[in-house]
Amino acid sequence: MISMHPIASRDNPLLKELRKLAQGNTAYRKTGRFWVEGDHLCSAALLRGLQPTIAVFAESCWSQAAAQFGSAAPKTVVVPDALFSEISGLESPAKMGFVLDLPPATAIDPQAPTVILDRVQDAGNVGSILRSAAAFGFKQVIALHETAALWSPKVLRAGMGAHFGLLLHESVPEADLDALALPLVVTSSHQGGLIQDLQLPFPCAWVLGHEGQGVRQSLLARAQVHVRIGQPGGEESLNVAAAAAICLHSSSIGAR
View 1 (cartoon, rainbow, N blue to C red):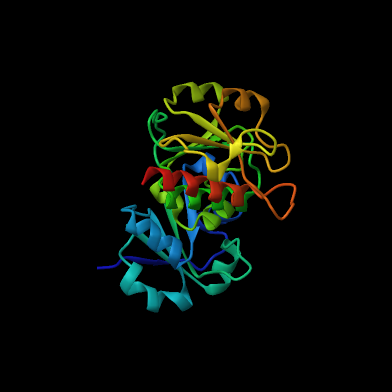
View 2: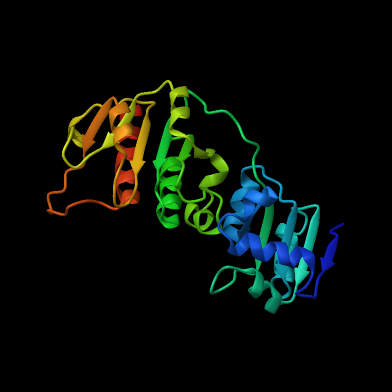
């Protein structure tokens, strides 16, 4: 039997915590759990075998969602639509969400195909890169210091469920990259061969850098392979998420 708990007060302690998780970029670091909103992300979590600790529904959504999601969590909360809108960080709230525990911290896998994020600061870019990583067979993402918070609501939305199939490491010092037993590959506008002309190593670790400054010099010095993405249209550079999709796809072709 589904155990449903109605909450009608905006001062309820749980709702206060949910507002922080849904609207704050780093609130998850204090609580050890994060918020996903909408049936797509909630379904993606369940498909990966994750169990939410709390499922939250707006009243107008509950009757339709109960059959599919009502038993997903040990605790199910239903709130008035107006209160759900106050929780949500979206202009058009999705009317359902899950609270999930952060995965336990693990050591870097030395052999896993990897993406290294060097101070990539836009949440949309980070989420898009995670999607490309998951799509093209890169199992591990290492976010160095000053990269956008990986489990923030904006990155989770942009990732569209990619988080749940990746091994993620956050706020990693550069020295910890010594654990990788893979060649590092970087892109540059002025160094290396054209990506379509190279036989790229796989598995490998792609390094993707800051939106304005690119990859830091110390990481460029670590790299075994430098590549250029040809731009016959004459643009100066590509958005880092677009460049990531090209690079990771090129590696996946070489792996087949």
